[in-house]
Structure formats: structure tokens, C-alpha cells
Image (cartoon, rainbow, N blue to C red):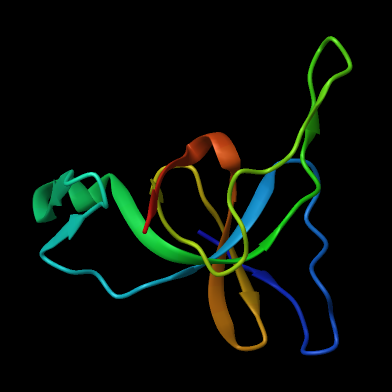
Amino acid sequence: MSKNNTTQKDEIVLLGDRVLIKLLDKVDYTKTSSGLIVAASAQDQVERGTVVAIGLGRATEYGNFIYPTVRPGDTVIFSSFAKTPVLHNGETMYIVTEPNIVAIIK
């Protein structure tokens, strides 16, 4: 899988409902505020990260605008199959669409 490279001077402007996420270290399990525990065996399918930046949102087919639910600084669980890797300022980060974020960890 090739990585999209940016230089230190580049700014990433996310379009639509895309979210830039910095991956956190994997742990044996993840526990959400509601008590949901995601086992280590399931972490091959989901990953945990911190939201770095968000897009402006997206328009529905009826013209209504949906703003992002997540905010920069949120810790989230997202599908590992739906990510686009980018190398930004020497760090690997991932771009995902907001519907592929399954939970916010509080």
C-alpha cells in the first residue's frame, strides 16, 4: 500500500465528511464510556486514534447539511478497512470518512 506524502509546509484540507486520525498504540482491549469492551481479537477490524482535523461536513440528497459529530482531540474507534494512509510532517496518519468511525471514547 503506497502512502501519500506531504511536506512540512503542506496543510491538509479535508473535504466533505473526511476525518484525519493519528493512530494510538494498540491495547489488549478498549472500553467505551458506556461499558462496551472491544477485545484484542476484534482490533484487527477496528483501530483507535485521535482526531487531528475534520472536514466541513456533507450535504444530503435533500440539500440539508450534516456537520461532523467528532471534533479535533476526540479519541475514536474506526474501521481499519476504510482508511487512507498519508505521511504528514513525518508521521503516518489516516483519512477516514465519518461514517466509518464507530465510537467516540469519553
